[in-house]
Image (cartoon, rainbow, N blue to C red; front, side, top):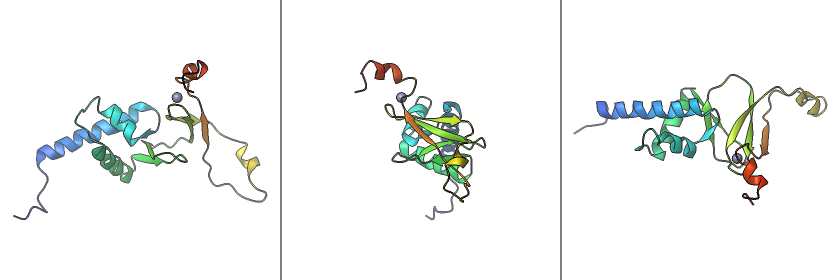
Length: 143
Ligand SMILES: [Zn+2]
């Protein structure tokens, strides 16, 4: 039987819609860029049957549609965030490895450029210890 052009069963489409809605909501609610694994961890609280392959597939679809952007911090797995027009940069905790958005303008950038060059864009990655990890670091629990 030729199955290639058959529409997917309604139950499959309904499930995909639910999975997509959960992944989108996780990204919208979390207020920071997330790895696929982080998306899975949070999304499973709402949809226990969700798997990592589905998360990757859903993120790829959302990215192709322009709803989600991929963020690549040096030496880290890709992260995903809702499409944002506001200029933002990143802070990554060296302990829990979570990334956070950093907002604000950087007037010094123009003074840092090589002579006679023009800066078109910039990305700033800050590294340190987040507010949740600071008490642990202070007490030596993160050595
Ligand atoms: Zn941390």
